[in-house]
Image 1 (tube, one colour):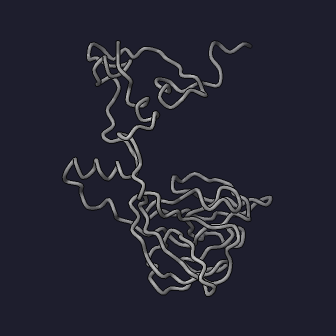
Image 2 (tube, one colour):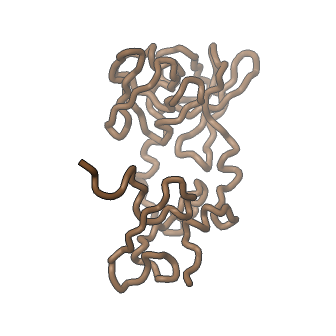
Image 3 (tube, helix red, strand yellow):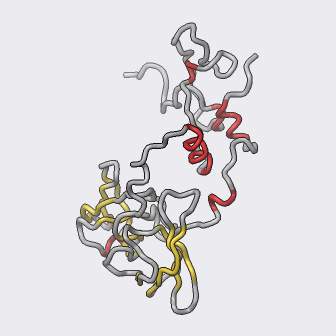
Length: 232
């Protein structure tokens, strides 16, 4: 009888597969009631993010954290509703061709898209109360005009230019973000480690996991919307 496969072990939430607590101590994003002018008082190198995080404070002493735009510096002033790099604004108020990052999926959700180092999306146009944005994947996506984003490109570009010479360094880099590394093909495993394991052949057993299955049981093909021959 085989043992638990690695997906099942990770889904259980044991100490072996666990995010380090300090990786999520800083939570960047926009609060729902932010406005006015803010000053960058500190730039933070966060373990769990590939973008430096800017700590900002306004005249009243309130503080919030946001992903830093490229070339942002301590002492720089950013504003909500502005048009310069580092400012936060509603995407419906920006011109076509503006580069943005940390884009909200729904208004006031704090930012969900384009949050990795050196990345940016581009505003393409507006139609019927929606804004079309060219994502880093070169695919267009529509957002509501009230969704907020930071103007410019995310800082941290070129972070992967220097080669990682030791496997151990890569392992701990991925572990800090709770990413599994190295990723091994199932058919290359031993039979005891995975249902598709053993080197006898690559005739993978046909298996369709349920759509609502737990992460540990999603092994094999993704659940199709329907199975069997289509009726005419």
